[in-house]
Length: 119
Image (cartoon, rainbow, N blue to C red; front, side, top):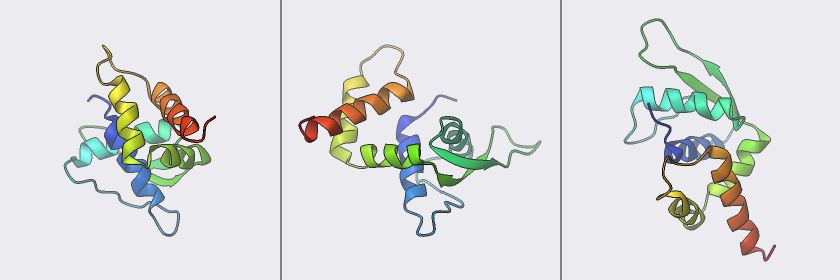
């Protein structure tokens, strides 16, 4: 399964929207449980959130549930929340052969936000 940066963004923003800070079960329209579970793992693995693995022997892919965002996850949410900022950053990387890393995307988002403040 390929990493979907848009789904990572949606999972982080959905976790942030929780009124209690506990994300619980997150569903995202247009994505399967397998895609959400695997990308939940990627969000946790990248340090954007804490989570719990719920993978069982019958599952076809890893299944992780995000429990809450880390400080880095909140920083990512702040930088990625604006559709304009997100589209600008992903537009810059769209035509790059082989894609880019999540770390590069985070740096691009940070640079775009900084430029909005004249930094």
